[in-house]
View 1: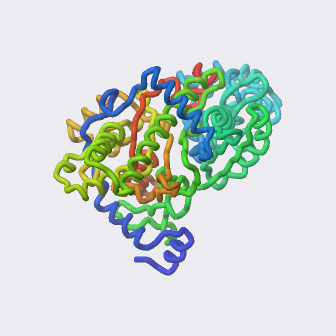
View 2: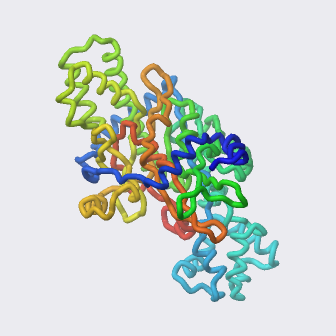
View 3: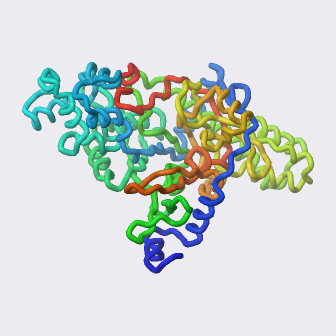
Amino acid sequence: MISKADQTLLQEKGISEEKVAEQLKNFVTGFPYLKIETAAAVGQGILAPSDEEVKEYLTTWDEYCKSDKSVLKFVPASGAASRMFKDLFSFLSSDHDEPQSDFEKNFFANIEKFAFYKELDETCVKNNSATIKELLATDKYKTVVFNLLDSTGMNYGSLPKGLLKFHNYDDAKRTPVEEHFVEGALYSAMGSKVRLHFTVSPNHRSMFEKLVEQRRAYYEKLFNVEYEVTFSEQKQSTDTIAVDSDNNPFREDGKLLFRPGGHGALIENLNDIDADIIFIKNIDNVVPDRLKSDTVTYKKVIAGLLVSLQKKAFEYLRLIDSGKYTHEQIEEIIRFVQQKLFCRSSEIKHLEDCDLVIYLRKKLNRPMRVCGMVKNVGEPGGGPFLAYNNDGTVSLQILESSQIDMNNPKAKEMFERGTHFNPVDLVCSVKNYKGEKFNLPTYVDPSTGFISHKSKNGRELKAMELPGLWNGAMSDWNTVFVEVPLSTFNPVKTVNDLLRDTHQ
């Protein structure tokens, strides 16, 4: 089935024929649902630190930041903002010329509150010789929206979220990229050095680089720090093959069609980073300075907890590798794995001493992450669960709804009763106690992918997403959940979200 031209394409992308065959098999067999024990909750897998513990973790993190270790903030930023403007695109293509829906009315009634208002006004004057107020006074609502979204105007309909003006300040309008500059200085600085990494799309990379060069000096002076900013793009080798309704490779003009593998592909980008501790946060979950306090505090809290757990795990690994341990010390390690890392196995009581130590070493010697969890407010997306793993253990996992069998009444009830939601608020430890980097792709559960139905030029196709970055791609990590305030979760899904008080 693979032609010479196909082989050339695969070589260009860095994808093996074996990988394609494996993906084609997944389309036929599908991906299994995960078996869950229960939704995690406070007291059942989610920690709610006391005021005293918060102080302790803050102190631990501040001390760590004085060490010779390296810390980096990793921000997935390749997502296009087109979905933010879905309602405005619909308005442009509608039969009505004046706002009718609540969304449309809200947008125009509060248009002056948007951080991009001044630039949009200037764009309207340049393109139509009229201000926004003048255009609206003559019912030219669509002209205003066209200037915002189209490439002849501000092109916001095609730009990534990271480059849009989100917030108003007296001296400037800030983009999400700049807000991450500020956050980085406030909680991930090592001495005077702040390392930031953005994953971007190839066609927008130069625009990100230009913005960074324009604004870097301003924030370095503001916070008396030095920024090291790097970028990467999703690797072509992580693209997945598309198939038709009969699960045969989808072709256009005889050429195999590959599609980006979803955010799970970024585990490769994360794997290329050299840092001891890595913060992960979405590009659009940022707030103005007046509301950053909770975000900064709880980023430090989860980081302080992480390095506390890491320190203990490293002590136990050194002890195991020395071979000089007692039965009481092994019992202590078991309690740590079960009670602090939330990884349980009903089989360990049947293991011989040697096999027990091998088991414990494996569970300790792997990447670790502490994830902030917010109380569920009905947002779509993943949540925290205690789930069964391939080796029979039960551990904490972030699961998407697609991984849970909603036809199973018990599983569906567990999902619907979930008290918390995943806001993508992670801090990760990716090196072992010897300072060697873990090879992160080896900790991915390949059976946690996802198949979706799409279309291309009017033809139906099936696409495959790789195991997601914070669920299947981190399935075999040590995972700990911490309840963080809802005030730390302020994503911008639609342009009107920028009108909320948390973005004003």
